[in-house]
Length: 306
Image (tube, rainbow, N blue to C red; front, side):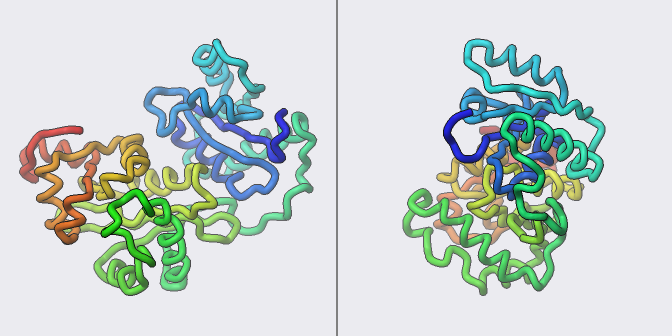
């Protein structure tokens, strides 16, 4: 192992959809280790890369076939140790049995490889990690998360679009009053990520998707998005800054595609009601249902994909 103080653990499954994101969420707040998650499939939300393999001190795959695939993919590099947790693809996101199996297997490997025992971290109480609806008592926390996470925009989006705070309390209250329903990801009793959904006419908007800076790269945004998409049965749109290339790539990993500039200029005032300057500096992405509805002629849209 390198001289880094905390071992770096990379969890890998097939498509980085259920098992490895669950593992990353379980250990997101663990003070003993740093974690990432990835998949071996080209269709993965995040496909494992050489940088991931170089970062890791230990790779924990869910099945032996994932180890075989990693060996094939990275045959020309010195790979970190790879071990299998032997967990079949029989579970949903954060299923309790899946959580228990991941913990049991991971803890044994941490003890064997790094001498890390169960007693090292403080005792955890409450949910390891769960998606839940937000309520009125979460308002201040949501406000803090939004304004912490949006620091990533500073110096990236146009200077005339940046202000402090990025989202004032009055704007957040107005967003909630307009019908945005916030959901959050809570770990160890703390809300660390939020995402909103807003039904508008015949579609649903994903709004204000943010994760605390300290909890990024643990798959929390993906967990929230997948959970909410499972609750939505209408075409879905997402708007974001054109300069926020990391946000665009994130949504594209989950099947969203860019709409045309012409269609973007129509959709933003229609569904979001944003000012002209924000229309000029933003993009809109749609899911498969959106593009399917366009192909059927409802709603009218210029057929174009980024």
